[in-house]
Image 1 (cartoon, helix red, strand yellow):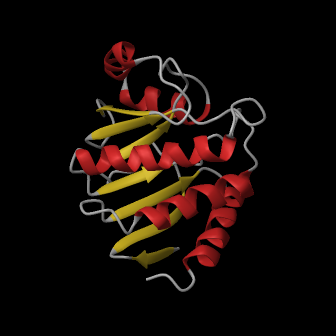
Image 2 (cartoon, helix red, strand yellow):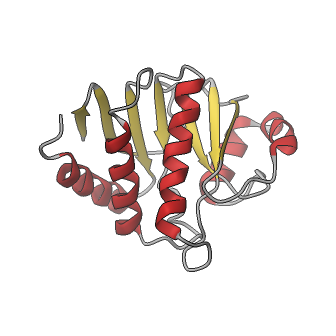
Length: 180
């Protein structure tokens, strides 16, 4: 599913974030140390190879809401944008910290002349952020930011499960209504 908002295509797909050959940058739902882990961070680090961990080492640690950019190494993209989402119920204010992840990632994409970026559902795995609430924050921020984006023309949300994709599709349909 996709919607065009302020000249930016915002889309939701079900798939693997580490296998998005047609986007310039993928976003890693990172841990503070920017190391390999489970979920999205594990998939991205495994696909990218050890060079990614080496490049990340001097950039760590990062704080919730912060984002940094590296090369993509063995991934089919040019860049990986790493952002640390909030741990739900622990890092406060959760909603603002999660919103910063998306805003800061998009700002890095703009600064680095990235035309297309793929996001996972940040903080919804082991960090425990409720999926529906996270989808609302993510899509609201991205749709609001489309007004400011000059270089980014495609923002893709890549969700691992069918259910996650359905939730994001429903929220995109709801929030994009009347925007254009």
